[in-house]
Image (cartoon, rainbow, N blue to C red; front, side, top):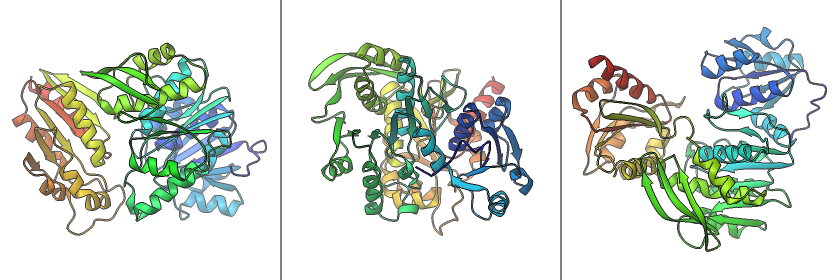
Length: 461
């Protein structure tokens, strides 16, 4: 926890306030009573929402923006060369990272729940927040994207419970001191930062060791790296998983459009049926640690199941863009081979008779290069695949690496490489027919394709 004397701080300025993590932080700090301002390079939904709330928002960075700041918080995208960062340093203003501020806010709560892992942490943390809210626990929470039941992705609670999605990508989760940790899984992502799997695993081990002395860790025991991690730690564990000897598991799974039904099993005993209105086996898996958290804090099965029954998911997680003339368009954030495979599996399970057309935008040159062979095996549940060029996410190009790298790695499927994203809608207009399911996948701006395609369908009619 950073050494912060927040009683002396009145004015807080956030540089890079438009991002998901920073905007949530700004909202909660404003709700705590601080005078909050923020800046970003462009306006967006998050900055507009903060402005409507009462936060002073600047578009563009200028030294004058920090003249009243007692504390400056900066995002991982901001460097020390930023003009506001430099001016704050010249003014002698305290400067901290986003993760340090998040840690301080979390530490104000008695029960601090941090959800980490390569896949599923956004949905799992959002499910936990909803269940605790429904149970009248009034948690503070920070989720990685917008949710249906709050305006934005964060909310100030009453100080007893806090829930945060814990980001491993830049090791910022090492600032947290949780009393409860959920580790969904550990896979080879963000290798552009970690370099080796050994370094990534060591970082997760450090995170696990930050658990409070009387705390506990909930892990998917079917994940091999989680099993190895358990051997290295001396703490209380609760296990979950869809296979094996997990304490929490599911059986009698039935999948339907945008949902599933299963029996929750705890320590070998079936507790009752659970209905979800989010699709796929991965969301069944995401719900299991939520039951573990709820039971640990005194909620009963029926209360947890009732809250999950109305959980509609997070933004860009199997999100319906629209349906027109029998053509369904869905968007998802999937950008790792495991996520692509799970998302397309959910589509196939929910709509077994539809033709699934997947439009995939690779995210980062480094990820494309390192995982190209696994991407080649990830599209098995798609009937047709369109690959467009890479969303760089500020990375420089790597010679010889493009969207075609993944298209060439896919064998035995109907796959097409369309480098320019702007041409995809024209292609879809010529090919798509009634009954098709269009899936746009990727962590970049591929979601715009689904929106434009839906608009074109309506105009054509």
